[in-house]
Image 1 (cartoon, helix red, strand yellow):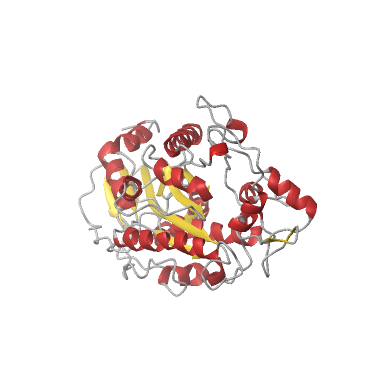
Image 2 (image 1 turned 90 degrees about the vertical axis):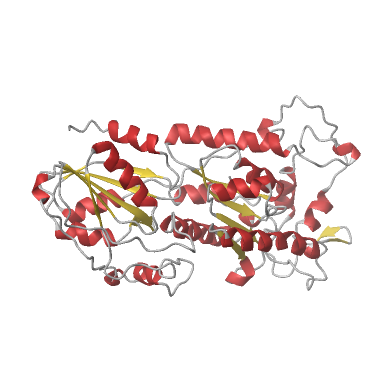
Length: 440
């Protein structure tokens, strides 16, 4: 929760960014040290090994030194506090050199925690893993459907292509980010573990190449390439941990915006806006890649309502939706709100007055409703109508998106609404709609 020198850690920093934060004690570690498996814990100190293996510096002439430009906080008291964090796995036979953890036990415990978070909050979790904890993080995807994304901080290895973990991640299209610090590569001849970490981080390249080719999202972040230098294996405790947290948050927001988008996505086909109107419920939606459209169809099937698709005159291509490119259409529009006026093939609906209930669906882009919806909102009078927003996103709820649309509309009885993940089941959507207590 805090760094060895007493600054705020990531748990507090991400709370300030609006996230709920849940800290997991790995089974047989920390406050979860009780175990049914007997281990043998060595009393031999390993401080020097930790220090060099994780690229903080070296131990020379009976003192700890720091790599050039290191962001690790300095001082004897800091080091004392840092080494106090190194708790053993109570089931390890470390006295005989066995440093392995039971990956499956940990993975299933993590999955159970994520499921409990979902039961309490109704939200999927962004799983942040670190180091050896990266392996059970990948495996956890086998045991839960509620992982929104995985942010792996210098994992031991990325999943092997075609492994069970790989296929579990791919089946659920879980976005992945892999973060690596500085002093990695054979050119760092004075950093003992630089070559080892170059080998381990190369697994991220193999994974990402296959994962993205299969239509999922994997981003490798090598901090020096981002102009962020001096970081070791414990970047979340370094002096610039807030800068890295900002970078992680930006990735989360971009991934939220792109929920459901894939590199091979095609624009939605235009829908007719002049079809016969048949009921008192209308389901209006904009879908970038099909995720929101799928939920809209489920709502229409449940309510017997009519569908009205919002189609930009200039549809968004997959390149337009590439939020990782600062020059892409959505990135430019995000940075320049005056460019978010999106002309639609149709912004008004025949027999508008016959609808008492209007569902409005959209993907989340940078924490707000995708702006093609704005044109529809501004073109219609919602007086006398119950308006229910819904969205598709990677992990967070609607946020203020519904409130901002209601403010823009200036009329109508706007309800709280609901967020759905892209893989939501029809039964979950039906249960939500039936729970709204709508008449007819």
